[in-house]
Length: 318
Picture 1: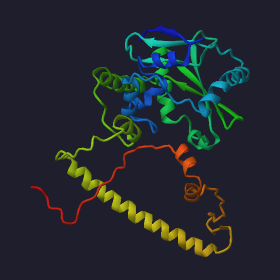
Picture 2: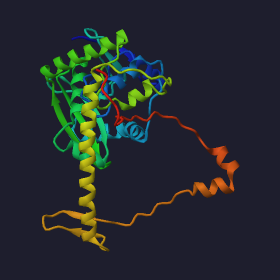
Picture 3: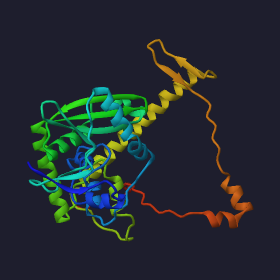
Picture 4: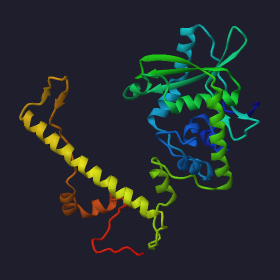
């Protein structure tokens, strides 16, 4: 696999960078394109790639990740005694042009080989996800980068909770790369042909974007919907029963705690039932005393509520 430089990123506006990313599958897209992401479905990624919108969420975590990247790079470089070169480019595979890579840096090793460097910031709340090595989504991202950039290994450097620096050396895995190329090829073919991928358990947000409003019509579902509906109602019944059992157990434990705030069991469990103070706006009183003010600052939002029910007098149409 050979590569070329698609664009330089130094001085590039974020909107330009986002527009370039629509031209292919980047490393952070790889797990979703392969249907292996916990956070984004193939349908959600498909919408991003086929939409003309170049806006994206830029949250606090992303801000600190970008801000801390140079610091982490310098500290890591000092720690291992090797220079990390910044790579201000988006690379593109010439064999698979839909595969692109925007990497954090490289290290030129003493034996003449080149290693990739990928830098991550990890919330302390997610430290457990990294306890046994790279989470699957990031492993796929690294193998995607190694494939595009034709490199044998990568240093994945990650700062946990702002004060714990770790790194892991990940070797190139040809079998995984072959699978990634196969799955990404199938996904990109759907992008090119504007054919929506199948939905999965992470598709709710994408479906809300795709179908934000109803057209007020009623339709007859296809025959295969009956199996889905039977399964849905069976799972809902189990879910309701489990919720009742959980509530019963919780209430029994609360009864044992009584006025105590915390307790420990002989098997090492810790239980607490603490006071929580919440402050809320008395909207009923505000509407009564300041109706004009409420009307001025009321924002109307619309959403679609999903529900399934079967009338008791329903008869099968067979």
